[in-house]
Image 1 (cartoon, helix red, strand yellow):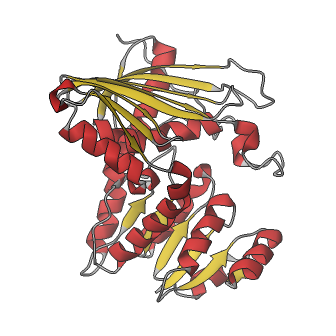
Image 2 (cartoon, helix red, strand yellow; image 1 turned 90 degrees about the horizontal axis):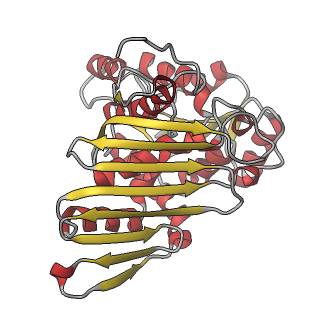
Image 3 (cartoon, helix red, strand yellow; image 1 turned 60 degrees about the vertical axis):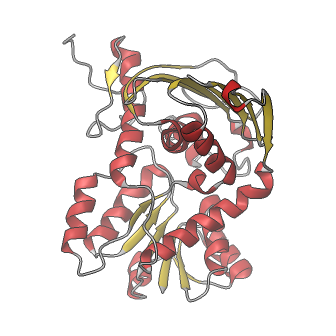
Length: 347
């Protein structure tokens, strides 16, 4: 299987590492930065080029797109236009699922594997949390979750051109859909959202640093998500209430506490080493993608679902401007900037 890896930044390097560990693949790197090509050649022994035409001349079967989120679209379109399977990192702006379906319909037997990233699906703690919510908690009433991102720790050696230094692709904004991919998988899909986007901290980064969402789920339950990059402390913690009791969880410590009287055991604790499983989940994800390309399994996350996730971010940001709870519309993707929506005066 010939694979074209597009981009060799932090995520691209991770993908190169995991692809090189897979059997039966031949990897070529496309990256316009000479230092990244040299590093990839030294570390992974892959051929590389700064020319997209040269990269496509290798006739890849598969594209793995690991550019910043505001640069995904052209490469996704290239994959669709040329009928190639592709994997794309988690996004702020989901590609149109109808265009993906149309490209799939044009492809001969076997179909097109269009795989938006869903990394956290492959972490055993997330899998166990989903099982507890679905099988033990009973009818879900509400959940809450907070992610604290230490933004200055994101590749401090990169210059001002680094995507996380810009308002449109700020870490807190990018991580809202990244976390929602897993939260929707665990708790259910939002149908409406309200939100607040503000600047609270003193980090030397442009724009807002805190996103807070309150969501109505399709089940009728309520979901709350806050992502902040105004604190040096990293955290991934949450809670959920159902008609059988209460759970509290901490992804970074791998701790899941349950107060579910029907189980007769009061509080109990399930431990998982989050850090030990963190890098393996990326390897599991890329292996699952290759298995889907080979026809051995189905990819578990679609562009229809990605459009809902990104549409939830759009609804919350629009709500900040309108003062209303906004319907989650998969056709309404986030604006270029979180305060750049066209606002209707209609109630």
